Image (cartoon, rainbow, N blue to C red; front, side, top):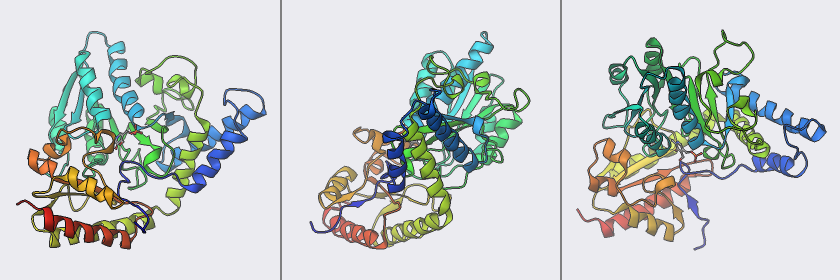
Length: 397
Ligand SMILES: Cc1ncc(COP(=O)(O)O)c(C=O)c1O
């Protein structure tokens, strides 16, 4: 094959931006101190963490003391859900704290909720509509006196649906309930302002926006009345681990300084051309969707046309086993995905697609094509050309 491989799996992960690698290298090779040490090496590392905390906080209009660095989206989600529920139990031992989620959450929320339920907490799983939206009214109706936390993802990782987060947060606050959102897919793809959107906890992962793998953050709303310039995270969350006092005693362990600085650099880069890059992706996304739906018989879009991640396309090709299509695409140097990458080895039909009302067969006929910084119009045309030829031969209507 003479052409370069084409990557259509940016919702799974992204390449690290060269400027991110460059700054990380400085913190691997030169400024490698432990941020807890008091000599110059340590102070340099500590300053780098301050810089990264400021950049991260400013981007979502939060305060630096509201940012806890973690190992990524899964840890942030666990910290939010387990943290709040166990803390409530600690504060009110005779109650059974209640968690509300929806049925198409990422496994990092879904399985954490399953675990919490086994531990004796109460869990409500709200169904979504046929495009993957959570209904704010259903959230309100599910709230009970023992509800401790509502967790609804900002944008879905398989079908790109962007939820009415501000509205759901408003309802949570009206009932004095904390609101968490898994923003791993949405971060840098839609503007997020935690305060005006009524978000108390927000999960982020660097490898989805050209930062390194294994680093992320959890935003935790600070109560300014309790302590002005001090994190109040430990008032609301029980930590997942115990040890040193790093990250406001919420996350013991020597900080991953190169990773954290790399994530901050990736945020700066995203911030510099957010609107331009996302508008470019929306045009490419809509071109791909339009051509598939108009030209390939019996193809259906999974998820909505609007309020959708700028880079996500998920299509059901009737009569085509998506796994085979994915393998054939790979054979010609085109990377796509069925289900979500983190659990793509599973053979079960996607819980997300079943959750929006697709049948088992439709779920098995669905493929995710996600776009990113290096995707060009030419790449899309190569993909469309392959799809036309493959489906003409293999369709089994
Ligand atoms: C919506 C969502 N939440 C959480 C995660 C997990 O993030 P991480 O890979 O950083 O643990 C992912 C990763 O695919 C995701 O898409």
